[in-house]
Image 1 (cartoon, rainbow, N blue to C red):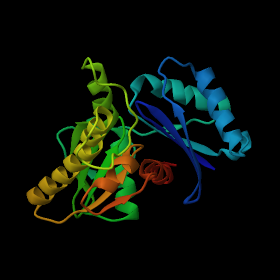
Image 2 (cartoon, one colour):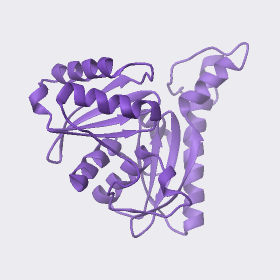
Image 3 (cartoon, rainbow, N blue to C red):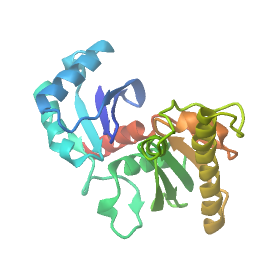
Length: 254
């Protein structure tokens, strides 16, 4: 089994692949203060929870947007499985071109999502990744990454509302029955859920207008399920795009 690890700012997502089949996914909290021993213990425990012992893991690949954890996670994998993990970064073979000012600055998670979309769904396409930040990436007809937009994430906005005001509370992320809120909580939920959905619709319109095409749109990320059902555009949700991209990159680089 190939273990794919997506290190995000909020969560670390684990996925196990046998050939092209995704066997399981799991999430653990991201904590830059944890040591390699702690991460090694945690990952082994999670895999055992899903029925996989140490011998099941034959290879590991990591995508990270938290640089302090890159070396820590590689050491954790070496400690747990005696494997040298691949790390997505400059020099890795992706199979797609990067047409931007500084290709080395493109986040590993963005690369993985673009690779998976190109190989599983085709190009041109627009990819939306809704995590701690909301990212929108454009792939052209040849499968070239041509640029992106980065937007404050849904939960960042939600926390800022409560932290930056005297009377607005912390709330759960749920859609209200109506866009017209009748109480404080529903007013906040309307703004956060429907407001983010409208923002995504508007950004899709702008990308379509600038490219002159009706782009097919694909989405992933932990918050996508809460927002995308309220969008007016046709958006294909694939919760495991980044993990699938990691599995593709592993095959290209072993």
